[in-house]
Amino acid sequence: MSGSRDINQNRQLNAPYRGENYRQMTPEQAAAESRRRAEARMAEQRRRLADDMRRRKAEKQRKRVITGAITVFAALALIIIVTVIAVSMALKSKNNTGVPVDVTTLDPFAPNIETDADGNVILPDLGDIIEETDVTADIPAEIPENPIDEVTEAVTEPPAETTWENYTFNFKADLSIYEEYMNPQGDEYLTLINSTHTLDKNYVPDDLVDIIDTRKDGRATQQIRLYAAKSLEAFLTEARAQGFDDISVTSGYRDYNYQSQLFNARLLQYSYLGDEKAYAAASQIVAVPGTSEHQSGLCCDMHNLPAADVSFADTPAGQWMAANCHKFGFIIRFPADKIEITGITFEPWHFRYVGRYHACKMYERGLCLEEYWASLGRA
Ligand SMILES: [Zn+2]
Image (tube, rainbow, N blue to C red; front, side):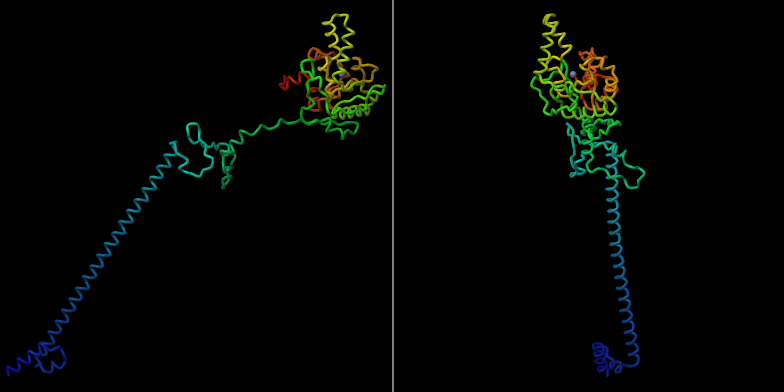
């Protein structure tokens, strides 16, 4: 019996757990076997639980390490960013305190950077531009793209032209068609001709025209330059409208040779005084050739007497002409109170055309042509 029990026990131990085995056991054996199996299950459960806990613990540790690493990295990054900002701000504040900066490295594409002789960059002076901007506006006024060029242009720009005073007068006659001739812009007709400012003996004006008011006594039709002739027409048209209808022109343009003839005739007249005195006497009455305004084509002699005489200044016609000639662009070239300056005796019949602007200036200031030239800084 004991032999079969041993065999049974051996079979029991080696056999896999199967329900039929219990049926071969005694109730005590089955109970023990059940306890054993329950304990094994519990042990297995405890082992799994422990494994699970270890796994959880390891996972937790791993997460903690990763989180720590991320935190450290973020902190490092923050420190770097803060440091960069701090350094750049420190550099900026340094620039503002006047430490020289190489502008070319700040903006290599900046246009037209100018340097001085030492190679230092010349920064534009924006003072004027800033002054012009409206500081109350939200949006700043547009600043020119290239302030350096703007400033340079402003400096090199020629000064504004001197204002040309426009003299206008009311006339009895309609002289509107003569306005442009009486009032030329510029100083083309301001030429000074006297003993020190002579004309070349070959000078002949190229715009001589006939004077329609040449005295009708058989003499040749006199001529003067176009602008002077048109202004003279206006002058005598207005004179007639004012009641002075007998004024006529006795002499206009004279060429060099004709002036020489006039002068030589006077020389002959005074030759009894001797050469030197004869020349002096002749030159006081007739301009030395080359020094006569009549060669310029810008003057004429006109009056209402049989022959030119200073008494013309006392006639109503002579007085009206003296008081109004500037309105037509003429001056009395040799006034009674300027003989010392002009070197020529008083000639109330000799009218010189210069244009209205200059004539008005001389009339207002009481200057003869020599004085007016000096006032303009001309030699
Ligand atoms: Zn004259």
